[in-house]
Length: 443
Ligand code: FES
Image (cartoon, rainbow, N blue to C red; front, top):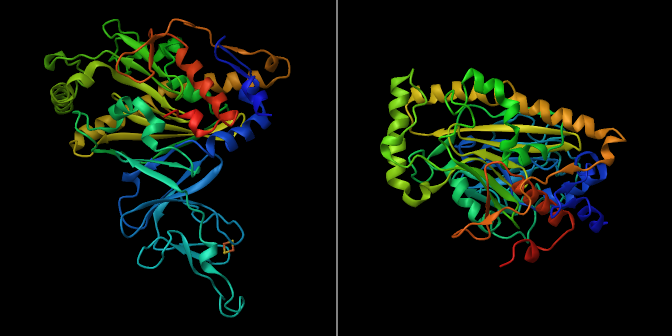
C-alpha cells in the first residue's frame, strides 16, 4: 500500500529503512511511481547533431530512442517494435533514415514530409498479401514520449501527460544546473558532449549515487589516496582545501540539491590547475576572468556537484560532467557518464580535459572507483536477512538548516550535513505515495 512505502522513510528523524535499497517490490513500485512520472534526463543534443541521428537511452527499465527528424526536431520513442516487441535499435547510436525492425521488417519513420506523427508505421512486408491490406498502420506507430524538452542542449522527458513544465519541476535548481551547461565563461549554452558516453554496471541500489552527488562531503576519507596523489580538482591541495568555503544547498519539496562553493570572485583570483600546459592554463585563466565579468551576482556560489531528482547528477565546475543512474534491479544499476566541454575550446584544451576525465571519473577513474566499491559493498551487506532489519542513519545536521533569501524554499547547511539526503528521500516518499502533481509542485 502507498502508506507503507511512506513509512519506510522518516525524514524528520533522519531514518531510512534498508528495504528502500534491497526490496524487489519497492523497486518495482519505484519504476511505476517515480520513473514513469518524473522528468528524466535522456541525453544531449550534441549526440544527435544530424537528421536521422539516433542515440539509445533509458527511462527507468525502458529502452528509448532519442532521435532527430529531418526537420531538426528531437523525439523520444520507445525502443520496442509494435509487432512482437523486438528491440529496434540495438546499437548505442547511429543514423537511420527509417527505423526497421530486424525480426519481420516493420519500419517506422519520423520524417515530417512522410508522416503526420513521429514514429508512424510506414512499411509492413506483405501488407497487401498476408494482411490483405487490412492493417491500420496509423494505429501501430511506435510509442512516443509525450513530454520532451531541450534545456540548453540537455534533453529531458516525462511519460506523464499531466507532468508540469520542466522548469517548474527544476525550480531554482536551474541556477545551479546552468553552471554545468553554460559556456565556461558564463555565456548561455555552447557545451557539447565530448567523446563517447561511458557506461558500466554496478552491483548497488541506484539511489546510492544521487544521494552521494547531492552533497556528501562526509565521505572524504574514501578519496584520501586521490588527494595524496594530487590529481583532483584541488590541484594537490586536498578536497578539503581550507581556502574554499563550501555549503550544501537543498530544495525541500523538489528533491534536488547540491554542494556549492563560494568562488574566487576577482579576475586575478584564478587558481592555476594546468601549470604544465601553458596554452591550457591561459585558456582557463581567460575564461575565469570572463566568467567574473559576465556572471556578476551569479558568481556568489559555484556548483561543485549536484543532483536533480531522481537519477541525474552533474559536476558544475571543472570537470563538467553529467552522470545518470539507471535502475536495473534493486541491487544493480547502470551508470552513464557524459563529459562536457565548450564547443569552441582549442583542441589542446579538449585533450587536456579528456585526460583529466579519464584519470578522475568513469569506471577506471581514481575517484569513481572508490565510490563504486563503497556503494556495492553497502548494498551487498544490506541484503542479508538480519542486516536489512536495521535502518540507515541520516541524522547529521538535523534541525540546523537555514533558509536562503532570494531562492524559493531553498535551505543551506554547512559543508558536511545530511540535510540534502533527507530532502531527497522525503521526495522519494512523496512520489511513492502517489501524490498528485498539484501536491508535488504547489503553484
Ligand atoms: Fe518487429 Fe515483428 S517484431 S516486425
